[in-house]
Image 1 (tube, helix red, strand yellow):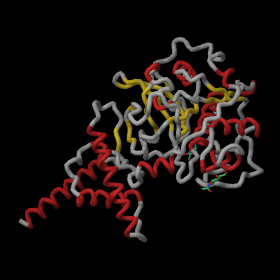
Image 2 (image 1 turned 60 degrees about the vertical axis):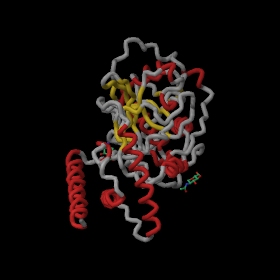
Image 3 (image 1 turned 180 degrees about the vertical axis):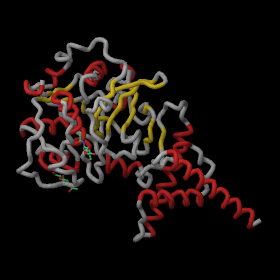
Image 4 (image 1 turned 135 degrees about the horizontal axis):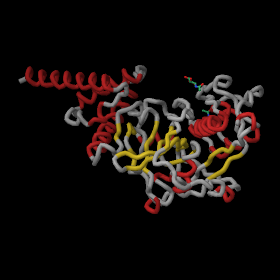
Amino acid sequence: MMISKMTKFILSFLILISITCLSFALSSEYSISSHGKLDKFSSDEEVFELFQMWKKEHGRDYANSEEENAKRFEIFKTNFKYINEMNAKRKSQTQHRLSLNKFADMSPEEFSKTYLPKIEMQVPSNRDNAKLKDDDDCENLPTSVDWREKGAVTEVRDQGDCQSHWAFSVTGAIEGLNKIVTGNLINLSAQELVDCDPASKGCAGGFYFNAFGYVIENGGIDTEANYPYLAKNGTCKENANKVVSIDNLLVLDGTEEALLCRTSKQPVSVSLDATGLQFYAGGVYGGENCKKESRNANLVGLIVGYDSVNGEDYWIVKNSWGKDWGEKGYLFIKRNVFEDWPFGVCAINAAVGYPVKTVLSSAM
Ligand SMILES: *[C@@H]1O[C@H](CO)[C@@H](O)[C@H](O)[C@H]1NC(C)=O
Ligand SMILES: *[C@@H]1O[C@H](CO)[C@@H](O)[C@H](O)[C@H]1NC(C)=O
């Protein structure tokens, strides 16, 4: 009796290990549960083994506190259950999936508090000038656009323990525009924005329109190589170089048509409600955790293109939570929703900003 129970446990543990190895072999990400294969391994012991493996994989140990370890295990267990339930509800391969990623030991409440403080929108007064008037060429847009393929997008960063997504969105938009206008792709300094933008709050969060304003008024921004990212508040360096400048910031009128047209011209900064994205592991997110009439936003990202898969249209959004989150650091979120979502899925159309740079004659 005892032996057969033990054997059963060892057997299932071995199966668990082999599935783990298999999924490690298939992808470098820790995505066991995203395949939903482990649903039946849900006894406490088995989830505990999974927790041990997860801790090892992510370099956590909570070694100095038994209490903390127990608390994190309970949270992990709840998240594991939620992830399996959500994945089981998927109706197609296209739909988004969740996994026990690096945020699996944080409760959704903790995650929201730490990573997703509400963004206070401050729409600049030039909003009315922005609309579509400089977009005279919005007919016959390509069916898909990917600025990564055109070499206008730098690598996905990891903001770490600093809420600097707004700064990475702004540097990303300027990096893209600079590549399009001058032909050069240069990593720009998000740390400079964290340290120097007087209207933002550094690692406590900031608003991207303000940060564009800083770059315009400062006459440029430094490279990441000169002014590297530290993931913490710092003092603004007075000797920062002005390597790439922009002339202006424009904002869109909130319609999906305008966003699509502008995205075909350059990467754009957007904000969105990312409440449901803690465990996002890929696929097209349909806004399952968002309210259709809401304009609330808590994350700033960069749209670098749009595409479709199996008839589902989506935006490609660069995030700054590292390459081990989502689609190698990117979010695919549903588009082509128009009236159904007045501000876009999770309010992604609500506050779109993009920099403007006059083509210099020397660069032409
Ligand atoms: C940007 O920085 C990364 C390292 O963080 C480097 O691998 C990459 O080559 C840089 N890109 C450019 C265009 O300099
Ligand atoms: C960073 O600086 C801002 C003010 O600029 C402050 O509100 C915030 O608490 C600081 N964050 C940390 C982690 O020190």
